[in-house]
Length: 213
Image (cartoon, rainbow, N blue to C red; front, side):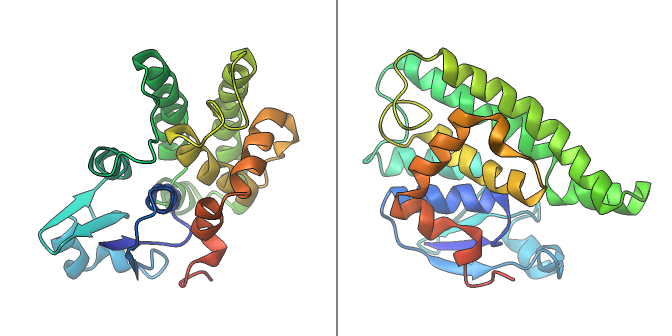
């Protein structure tokens, strides 16, 4: 497998975590968003949406959109599982992941922030405030759901990492980047610590990628 991704991209980060949790090897192909490598005709031919990540499989197909890639990995390589066996539990894990994947990350990603900078003249303080607003809203809800789960273990659900953690940890990294004080969410911070003890999460960290600036 070949993973076209960018070291600081949250969607790339979550895809790397899923690949490492599954114990899968892949070729790392850097797409430098700062240099607009994703806007080249060559990359457009690979992914018409011109976004990362894109996962090439056996030279036969290209998977795009991190939720689709991660769900494909879960179906293709079911062990270890990122989703619980019980349907109700799966719904809870998917809901936690969706708080990040649907409500927080999309309005804080690079193209949105570049639009704020270029079209509205937002400086870095304004960008940080923008991101902090939506991270706080999402993390407040996530923290409340963790607190209400009387069976919760060390991770977002139970005592092993799930899809929820795959989504959460890159957003925690983003929160640090945009200077959001994580002290407000002790349960999320505890999950972050537990994930940080696992090699799959450490190997996926942005700063450890070959194209890290």
